[in-house]
Image 1 (spheres, rainbow over the protein chains, first blue to last red):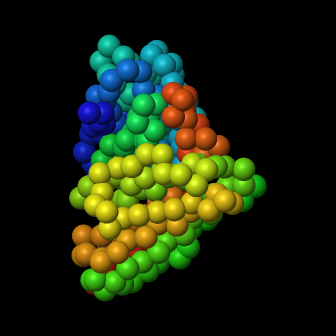
Image 2 (tube, helix red, strand yellow):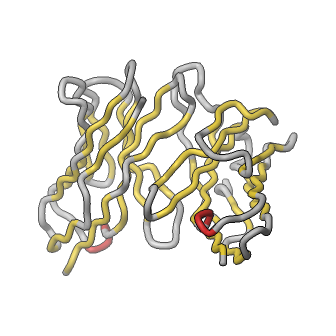
Image 3 (cartoon, rainbow over the protein chains, first blue to last red):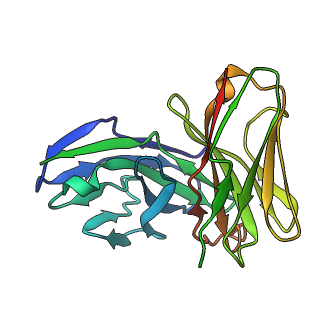
Length: 112
Length: 117
């Protein structure tokens, strides 16, 4: 079945460091891929998305490229800020299931 | 435009009781999905409703049920609560569930945190 695997956290970085959170997926067909972010005490917010191979999603300095050959969608940011501290979820949507499938989430802590 | 609202935000129940959670989608959204979030299992899909009909269902026991009203508001019910049902329950709405193959962004509410004692 469809699944998403994320690197385990927590990830602790200093402000202005480079961020990479790995995400790989298993799916039949051509799923859409997403990164969601969850701040403490809040629901999930869509951070970025990509709907087909080689698409690059980007938002707020974050970016991720849909790599079909490696079934990956790694999240990157060149310079993290303390305000980026949150839990990040990689997810896929496959039209024939009608649901989002999430990875386990990666906690990011950015220290000043 | 108001976001997805969920009530109540916090609930404490005891084993064996039942509970009903409510979700009001964004105006104009007809699809509502429910997810359970726990530290051990992460985010898991419960079910999705569209036009008052359950269109998709996750792998949860029959104790978990839901419904959707004509105004698209949705409720989920958990009967005979177990300790393992303690979780954050998230509701998400979208314009359409996208089962035709195209994705319509799901907007999440803040969740209801259920604690079962």
